[in-house]
Image (tube, rainbow, N blue to C red; front, side, top):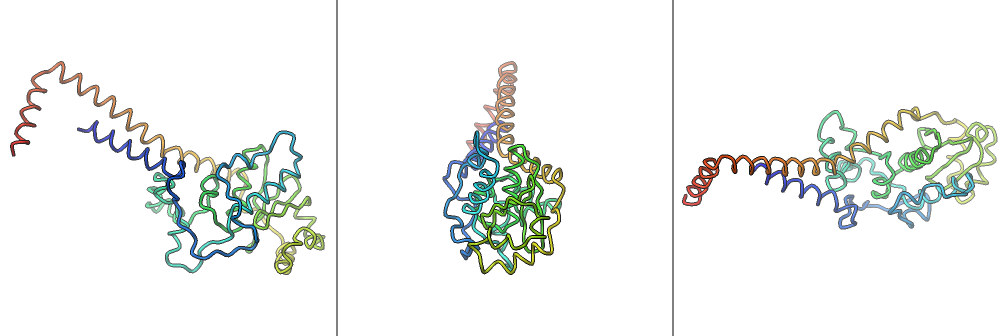
Length: 276
């Protein structure tokens, strides 16, 4: 019975883990309000994060520009604020990753109730977030492509700095200058943010005050690695249960074949249970 139960649980978990990747369910609720800083946000969803990788022979600056625009177009600029039911939209859901969802029930991983993914795949699947979420996607894609980006933070904005350039995936803007240069030459902002004249006063102030590293690159790499390790659990757990059920079932069958009195006792016990 233990082997049968383990087999049923393992099959059930495989089905749950497969629903979202197969596109049979959307594990995240639709945002109640659609508002965005950019007119093209969420117009080009990304199902396969690998399209964000650098293409063979692609110029580095062209790649950074494509990455900024692609992430901006895939993610809607929205995050619930002052909403008592905010975790409904921001937490890791059972259908997206039941292992992470289970962890979110423990105080140690309480941040999973209001979580911005480092991993591109689940973040793109959820489809919404503020500049910090979009920058995390860019950061992780760049790490996967061999770069050493830095997540740069201001209390009102987040960007990625890499190889002396700036990727602002919230607005879909790539700037081939460092943050230090932009802080001194803020007149350049009107050229690169030409599509956002209403945002320029805020952006001028943000770039003037400057950014600081959100966290060390190595620390964020560790968060990305941890996320991916946990994500593997939703497949490793049912596989382990399947192996357990097969081995346990085989041992039980072998035991009963060697000891027919056990099999006969079980048969009698089943008959009594059926009679009752």
